Image: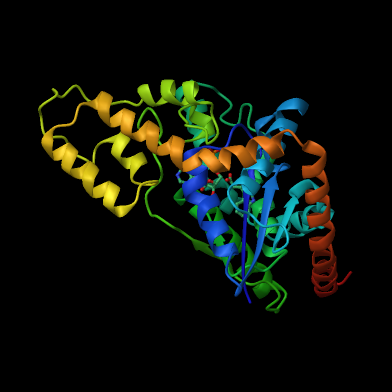
Length: 330
Ligand code: ADP
Ligand code: TRP
């Protein structure tokens, strides 16, 4: 059996980028009889964003309900919360002891924060940067390496973290002359990232997202905010540089994409293009939204499913951790 594993960090609402980059490909793969899947909620990773108790819990239930609404079958998939797996945090420490500091210095998230401090003219370039953010890729490596997946479905922005996990796994194997860790590969559905309302990468950190399960009015208002150029009504429009089209093509059929391309060539107005995108997203998520609304109002049921999932994976996690510790001399 081939194994896949992926997680979603529990900060903020799940958006179209998360859906196309991670959730959709993982759920599709998880339906195959030849694949065993580990899909989880990265709630401990969310602590790096200093979320409050209520923000953290709300996000955990929203992500849990989203996974289920998007087709995750708990009979077939290991579905759990990261913080319910204590073995991960022991492995995190073990991996920290063989990870060169220089490798973490190169992580994008850390470098971005340092750049920000430089721009702000701060004397201390590490001002307000915490060790949780700095070590983020090591915990992510533990999430992955503890379960030896062959592939990790993620969006483009997580590729560097995947390379770090491979690097750390290779270092461990080399240092302890073992082949315990499987070197994971990223499963990338699409090389491009989904862009947000302002044209940057769609991300909870940039406040430019379209969440999956908004009510119609809110969705409509957000879509109206998508940045467009000021070209006139009759002018032929370019699909490649248009944010509306780039989002639309993630959800439309090939036939619908062709029709939309024709409309662009004829000079569709931005208002009309936004209208088409709105109806597409409404119909695409209609059924999923009903399932989402059901689960998001049943936190106890979600807790139960996540606990059951954690119990199942902990059997494997604790037995593998014992093997790892044996190699270390414990
Ligand atoms: P965010 O940047 O909004 O905080 P996360 O870091 O929680 O998103 O990402 C969860 C998953 O969704 C990861 O696999 C990530 O690569 C994917 N993802 C996030 N944003 C995008 C995007 N704009 N396009 C494609 N995939 C994305
Ligand atoms: N770092 C990922 C993100 O920000 C979430 C994540 C945590 C993850 N652990 C993981 C993804 C393990 C894949 C595998 O989106």
